[in-house]
Image 1 (tube, rainbow, N blue to C red):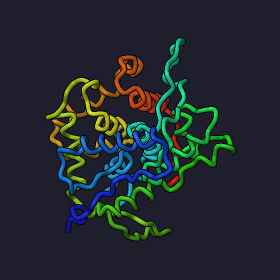
Image 2 (cartoon, rainbow, N blue to C red):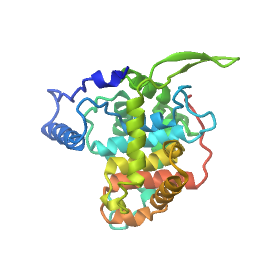
Image 3 (cartoon, helix red, strand yellow):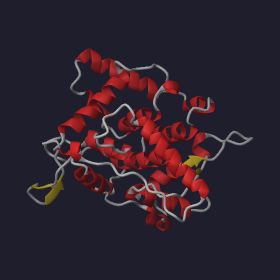
Image 4 (cartoon, rainbow, N blue to C red):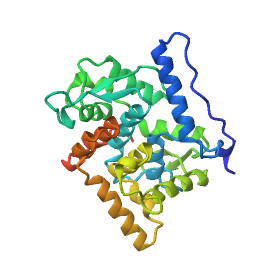
Length: 297
């Protein structure tokens, strides 16, 4: 049974005590969400970037991510930052007269209006309460708990995968089970709504095949984010696995074109600088072959 089809999506409600600027932010986000989903069935389950990346990484029947994937933990933190950027809550500081590089620019709070998502609002509070501001790379380390500074450990977002999985359970996409692994029991979240997963995989495949635009400046910002972050989280190939050999090679070739972009140059063109720069720093970190720990199962 497809439980996701019976879901009614909640709309953001503007609190009474927010400023007029914050109300404008709410209205702008609502309008953007409505436009973005105007072509979709109103009953479709909306997923955040974090939930989409996790869903791509989860094994359908087993209900857990690969034990060998040491990238998804940090990748999900990158998703949180970009989701906040897409929702108009944070941005990178301007390059300035000295043309600061992407890696040296700080994450700046644009609005502290709650998003309604617990994980996003928790991260947003950390950004709001931090002075002076920090870079994207620093925030990924802090939110992942990958820092040697004990004063920054309070920023760690714990049990992110489990919390996102529970969100997907509430949306009817996953279910919850207990599995025994000889020495320990583990809570797993097998797929229960094949439609949601199939729709996600199809969207990813079409983005680099039938609907490929060959120009990142013209790509949908959320879809571009999904492709880059799924690749950074080492889950993108899961969406390409069902393809035939020729389509698989073509899909991977086009993803590589996106990954190999001169993101400093793309940022200078003014295309969604906050988004592109978040992703740029995310890939800089991976290209440095950092050893990513896995703080939250």
